[in-house]
Image (tube, rainbow, N blue to C red; front, side, top):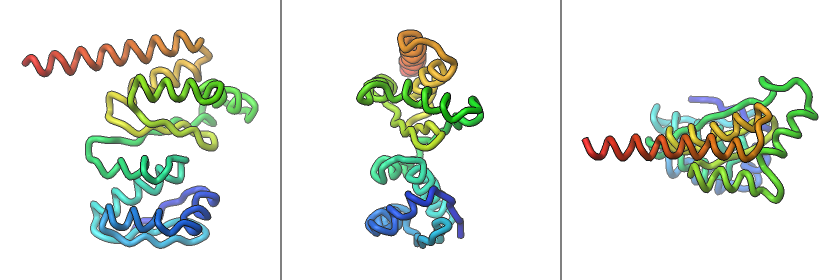
Length: 174
C-alpha cells in the first residue's frame, strides 16, 4: 500500500467526483481510498506505482485525463519547485505569470512546440511528456525563471527541439 500526499483542495475534488478515483482504479488495476489527509493506493506493485504517479500529477494540477497519460511507460513526470529558486511569494507570482503569459499564450506555446503538458499549480511548474519533450519545455521555463526574455526562452526551447529532431533523425539513419 502506498500513501500519496496531495493538496487538500485536490482531495476534495476527488471526493466530490468519485469518477476520478474510478478511472485510476480501472487503468491501474488497483484500489484507491481517499481520506482528508491523503490518498491510499493498494494493489500489485506496478499498479500501485502507476496509480501513485497519476494521483501525484493530479495533485499538482493536471486534469485526470492528462495525469493518466503517465500509465504509458514512455511518458514521464517532472517538477520545478519555484520556492527553491525564490524566497518571496511576490517573485514566485511574477515568474508564474511570465510562464503562463497573457491569456495563457506562453504556456500554450511551450506545449505546442515541445508537445509536453504543463501545469502551473501552487509554487510548482510540472511537466508530463517524453524525456525529450520535457527537456525542451524545461529549457524555456528555466530561461524564464532566470529572468531571460520570452524571445530568448523560446529560442532555447526551439534549439533543444531541433537538437532532439536531429538526434532522432540520425538514429533512424543508423
